[in-house]
Amino acid sequence: MKTEQGCAGCIIDDIGGAVKLMGLSEGLQLEIMRECMDYLSKNFSFDSIPSTHITAVHRIAKKLSGQRLPFEKLRTNCNDVGLKLSAKLSRKLKGQKKDLKAFELLVKWVIASNHLDFRTVGTGYEVPLKKIEGHVLEKVKAPLVINDCKEFYKILNSVPIKVSQPKLLYIHDNVGEIAFDKLLISEARQKGWFVTSALRGGPITSDATLEDGAYVGIQEVAHMVICAGPDTLGISWEEKSPELTSALNEADLIVSKGQANFYLFSEKFKEIQKPIMCLLTTKCPYVSSYFKKSELISVAKLLK
Image (cartoon, rainbow, N blue to C red):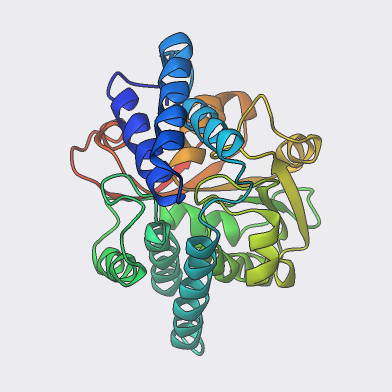
């Protein structure tokens, strides 16, 4: 999904909210905002995906502020909330019949956990985590507006011809929700899949890093954990790591979490030529319009 005209204002709002929360002086906040707007005035392009610009302005903020890891406390709190809620879900699912209905409930939770995001568009950086937790619970109760769970379930329960152990590449999104990703990865492993988890090599906004993955225990369920690339919002095609390139080539199925990763894969899925299961909650009307909807929706979409 390419950048739209309305993305510019959203990017400015996002970085403006971020620098306020970074505890910087007013003068430094203004300097960062000037640099970010200068960047956008010279580089804003409708030919790139939105996350390219978001990555750039947050890198400016990190460089000028000297903060390598902004929002450290919020990131840790989100991971702790995710661990708490996912443990409850795990106990709830334990002992249930392993059928499509139970699988769809798990997927709904994994998608709803995409709201464990303190930088969500429309809520901002200062939303209390309790309120975000409430958003998650509301999303679980709502139906999936785009629901390809049946096809997803069918793929996971089938072994591709001539493949002794099919390979699933799981590309994570935010802190907090990665605790729920663990449950879906465990489900795939039980069905015989070799799972590779891809996490960011450096922190940016609320995206989950290798360190966050270790904190919630991704290594306990994934066969392999790789660095997807540096501190980019979502996956960057230009900056992806050699390990991610290899994993993309070798995968029989790709699971993509979140809106920023959807930006990329909605553009590249024909080139990749692999089934890509996109699990996300839309956080702006432009992404919803891709699915011919105006409201914000929960999505389980198979790109193939």
